[in-house]
Each structure stands twice: as structure tokens, then as C-alpha cells.
Length: 325
Image (cartoon, rainbow, N blue to C red; front, side, top):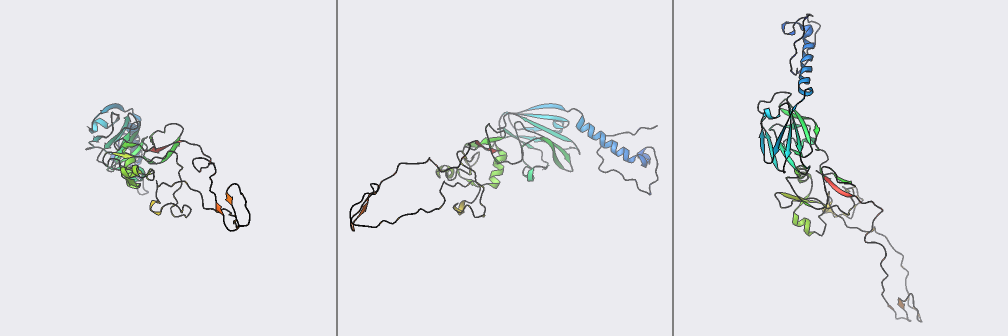
């Protein structure tokens, strides 16, 4: 009894035995058509076992400056990048990469440090293809990608590419988020956030952000114009759904109907009943505020004591606002 010889090869298709085929056993390479499907499936199984079941070796790379890696550095290895600071680039020379080969990266360090992975190959399966060419990895993140058909496909890992720029609240510091407190931050530390907001959000200059008495505090600023940007300051404010033409928020300035626009507190339009006062003979004191004569009278203006609080507000619970990066 013969045994099929398996090879670690990813068969692109499985042969379908036709009615016109002469069923014959034996070596599939020598005309044993009855065993061709089994041979192809066995090859796929061995390929998957070799690539995903065997334990990969671990290699640690210090990233105190930009570095270059070659295929022997990454194939069948889990590459750990120890990030000392942001803004560095890891360039991977993928020349000669084979179909089905997998690369895996993990970044060590604070999640406020980021490193750029450059492979020269388009990366598929990122949200809306936003990071198809520029993939930044923050400390604490990881990803694996398989090469197939001239592209890299994300197949696993723990990388936070969704909902960047989302406002979230918490009792405790939120991971992969920074406080929305108007801080000036480095673009190199939060490259994904800057990439997204500079593409989709209104950006004001830093002087506009600082000089408008808070009216521009809901926007991102361009910082120094090259290496920094400022995050919105959402402290002490409520978030409201943008009207976007619905016709409820009619007081918002038409020039500022956009995400991040500020609006001061106000009371809804309303009326009060006022009783007419007519002159008459004699003298009267009405609460100390009115002296009257036959056809001659005057008002004496007084003020009441303050009532209420510093603002008009509903019942609420305050939490720290964060922005996801």
C-alpha cells in the first residue's frame, strides 16, 4: 500500500473529477486521478500546519532610531519592537517574499509612543483603507499579516484602527485615548489621530484656538504647524448631536454648523405678563418702587438679590472626556 507524499504547498484550486475521467489509482503525478484531490488537500493541510501550528521564534529589536529589517528577520518569527520614542520607522525589505508567508509585529512601550511599519506592499483589511500605505503601531499593539497576490492581509493581532477620534468618557484613564483638555501634543506621538482629523475635521490655527475666548475650543488646532497639534477642550461641556439641517438648533451660527462648534448657554424664547400702570390722584407706595401723583410720577429702580447658580443646566454626572487615538 502506497502513501501520498505531502508537500507544504497552498493549492490554489482543488480538481473536480469529471464523468469523463477514467478513475485510476496510484501516484497522482503519474496519472492517478482518483488520488489528485486527496493530494491537493493534503498539501494544503501541511502548508497550514507548517505556517500556523509550529512555534515561531521570538526576536526583539530595539527601536531607538529608524531601522531596516530583511526577510530572514521576520519570516517565521514574532518580531518584538521595543520603542524608546515616537517617530521612528521600521522598513521591511520584502523582496523575494513568497505566497502565504506571514509577518508578525508587537510593539513594547507606552501606548503614547508609535512606530511606523513600512513594507512597500499595500495592506488590506484596514478600516476604509485609511492605513493601506501608512501603518503605525502604538506600544501595546500587535498585528500579523499574510502575503498573497501582491498584497498583505491583516489576519490577526491587537491593533486599534477603528473609531479613531471618538469621544469617550470614563471614571479611569482610557487606554489608547488622551484627555480632551486642550493640550498641545506631538504629531509623532499620535500619528493616526492626526492623520484622521487633518483629513476629516476642521483645523484652526493655534492662535485662533487660543484667542477666541473658548469659541474654537471644540476644534483641533494645527499647533506649531509642523510637529504638534492641539486637542479640543471638552471639560465642563455637554455634547450635542449636530443639527445637520434638521431645524432644531436654529441659534447656531450658520458658519459654524460643523463638528466641534461651540455654543454658549441660553434660555428658550418666552414671554412674561406685565400689568399696565396708570397715573391717579394721591400718593401711593407700591413695594417702595413707585411714587404717584395726579399726572406726574416716576420709577424708583431697585435690584433683587441673585437667585440660581452660575449656569443653566440639567441634572448630570461629570466624567473625564477622552479622545481615542
